[in-house]
Image (tube, rainbow, N blue to C red; front, side, top):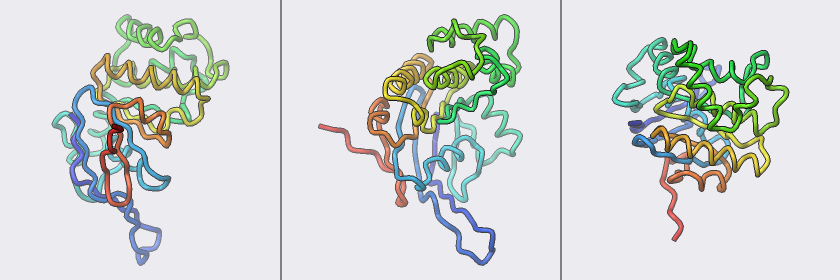
Length: 229
């Protein structure tokens, strides 16, 4: 479903004479529907860069990335934006909720962007808020919620349009251990229910252990972690 093939990415400084800084080298990854993987690695090794490339927010210098047979690297900006809105969901460490919208309207945003409104949208919102345990907080403002509740709203927003691929960048980094465990369990449960593929970027071995398999990203590339005996 997701194919990342021999991807390389380097960043150039402001000066043309400065050498490029290689971030990703020969990275390959393949996910089927329902696969849930974790990617670990030291800070600065390119984990977030890899997510940005998979999301089509940036383009690799070489290599190919395709989602369900559609090659992102062959699309223009507008086409990548449409694909991202329709087929991907995102969960971030910083939540990124709109403070002037209540829970329900924050969750509704991906549906609105994809043209779904009315009773169909209301039913989908109610379904996902119930799944994350926040149906009774639908009219609350983000400022009225705890950190764990905020991340559950962000998770509901990422899943409400039933994306094929969910990208989670350190989603539990700002949470206490109990809230983090709840969010990780919800993420896994919903991915498996919808048969969506998921990529979790994390520094936490505990978080990574909730995925089906774990990869380590280094300057040499992406390698599958050994499974404990």
